[in-house]
Length: 460
Ligand code: PA5
Image (cartoon, rainbow, N blue to C red):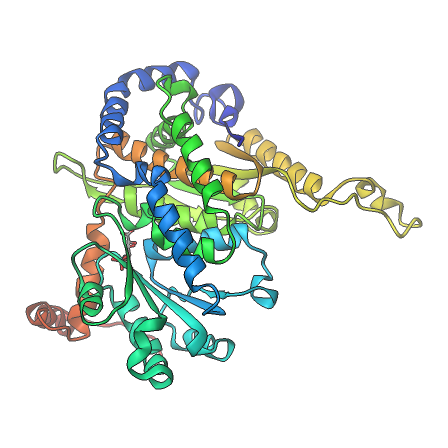
């Protein structure tokens, strides 16, 4: 497994002293941050932060493999019902490690409806035989409105097709004890996997919620976990200058001090596109906080933006190169592509195509990446490259674990709790209240009163 972090283009030697970081500053900051690193290491060793332990959970991997083997013949479709941290990791694994045409010729067909758009959900139905579909309902809290509603939506069809045996096509992954899914499972013999209480949704890709759809669709979960373990070793390095997660976090937090309040993640790989989507949640929910650990109001965070190379060179890069210098851009680069035939020019009379002859598409894509990095650098725009040798389960596992660990480090450097999400909870509670959930009556009245008092300005 080879994953490299190239941070040359954030240094003052590359992009000047106004926007760039000096090696001395980074060294000094790294020295000052050592107690934070030590504290995180202690949490790693004491297993307080559960996500650090997941790549080592052989027992879970075995359980997942056995479960998947036991149901594989029964189902030709899989519907993953979850949202946010309960969906984005599995989606990233599926799109990065399975073919984009997977559902056309492989089984079980995989569906990840992580929204309650009724038209979108209805579009799944003609593609599945409900009797032969496994519905995996994932909710750590067990009560998220969108997940509950999607379960209820599909339950109509399950009950119609299977009657009281509907439970045979359900699988739950949830908290070990709490929540509504547990109550349903207590009444019905539904198979349940658990999300450890000390693992937050956005750090849960290596729990059963990510491993089950991965294993079911043929992804090598052992390689995935092995990649994460190798990255755990690299990101435990005591020499912080050689520690890719620490350096990623330090560079980002230092850049925030220089007004770079946007973190762009730009894979030069369609396969890795949804890793940028997963990262968007990880970075936003973990670091976007109102108060620091001492309770001071800080309103900190860095807005993550996803982009795709080379496609967005023709959409976003003009802004990145010449617009406000308020971003730090991380490019994901792939060293070796699976399919990489040299191009031929079938139009010899078009001499202008000759420069492409003999080169592979992968070479072109990576040359475009280099050209973008150069343009950014020449315009004093900080940019980093995370280079994977190839896109396989081991490398994807490593990159996901790198970014999770970097997020934990960034939380330490910003002195905030990277593992809660009070802002998300606030929205969830308002939804429950407005939808009339029992126990939220007072909140509903307060919101309605506020809405009644509020003037509206609508242009028709
Ligand atoms: O990362 C998080 O904690 C959130 O994005 C949750 O995953 C999301 O809100 C869904 O919550 P739950 O898994 O409890 O349904």
